[in-house]
Image (tube, rainbow, N blue to C red; front, top):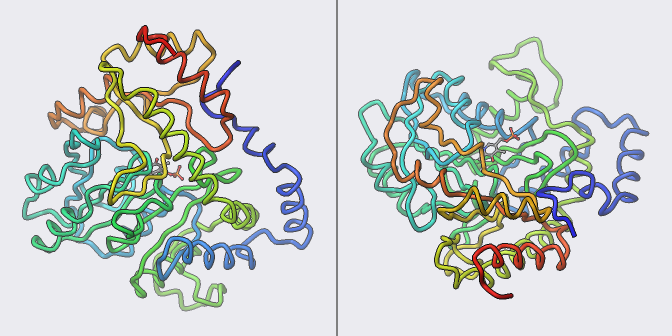
Length: 373
Ligand SMILES: *Cc1c(COP(=O)(O)O)cnc(C)c1O
């Protein structure tokens, strides 16, 4: 029995016939750039998430960059982000001419700590960028409240949280705008790079729609009178066709992830050396479990043990928070985030795992701690 952390080819094999048919049909009619497949996927995604506008773009990192550029923020302004995050958002903040301020996580959900955000606000702060890591929404009620009291914008890096909710509100649709990634290993993954930008704000949507295609107007033609600085950040049309199809069974894929998270939770909750993420049944939260991330002081030997049993695991982002990337000029001291990255581990988590694979993973984790199965 082997449990690869992520079975790349398995994601095609699960419905190879349907995917092949979509690719052949779309390519056969020359549907390569901004054809009806992009429009239809955008319409379906907006409806699924529950936002006014969804705009397909090249990837999740550029979605953030376009959003920041469309938001007309004061150059050099500070953006508060969690250090427990991928570098992507920080890179876009940097490229948009803004300054990253990484802050601590909260102990109970390992997401950005609202009180750390509040403490980091200065007169240069322009925005807060919560990152809904692992498919769980940050404490958005507290964050929106802080933003309102301080006159700050909120932008959501929801790359890992398309479909996650907090009190019924969608990740990505709570702040001014949000972004998703459809990188293959994301919950809604395609067969290459892709992403989306979502917002309920008409003027931001219009700007981003134009900017992703060299400043073209609504008719998708580039007029002589381009009046906005754009770029090429279009969603590939064949990827859009694949994504439109994958969205039709995305709720089932999320349900399967939640089922696996519940089984992990039940199997591990009595192991004292493990610190677990909140289980799926958690009041106001609807988590989609992009990852199942847990913490353990013996992380490295547990990882070795699982590897010896052909179970793939990952230490997310190489085990570094943003504030630890000293080569990029960061030097904040964030002890909770430091400890987290020394102890955190991702177990296999995706909708194509078999029950036997989940069982094997559970038995090996319990075996490591000497707990009978
Ligand atoms: C994957 C990811 C991104 C970047 O998405 P790409 O589509 O790979 O550019 C940004 N933020 C987070 C938290 C991510 O996990």
